[in-house]
Length: 117
Image (cartoon, rainbow, N blue to C red):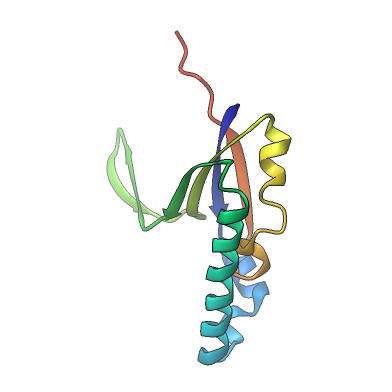
């Protein structure tokens, strides 16, 4: 089995298009509760494929030759899964609550390749 890193993407455009901010506080809390339950159900349904359930991601610091700087990127969370193929890994995330209930944009899946040498 191959391993794949899935990163959850959240863009301002997706957030705006979702209407999340137009919801009343009660409706937003209800949708958040529904989303957390759906996410838990997704984890249970795919528990055999999940290597690391992951976690939400916080603020970003970039380190380069220029030093350390605060930046903003669209990464919101991650999960590591195992599957026979890249396509099989991607299919695990079809209809995911990240973008069907929450105001997320997408999930990007990348194969974790072996270290060279």
